[in-house]
Length: 77
Image (tube, rainbow, N blue to C red; front, top):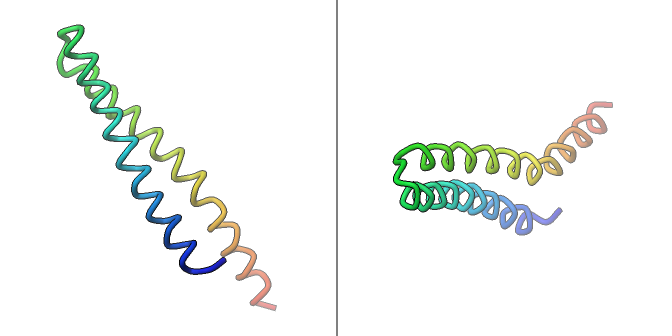
């Protein structure tokens, strides 16, 4: 894989983390405003955003982890 493509994928991972957490918090604040239940839904949105971010990062980085293990197995012999 070209290093430029890998770098752009890693930048995308950062944007995904930020987007998931920000959307969770903003959605939680919106629900809190409608239900007048601060800060319950804000915290719930933050936790949901973090869970979505970890899951998405795992799926995005999984191909990189597979490539590294293949190279180390072949290079050792």
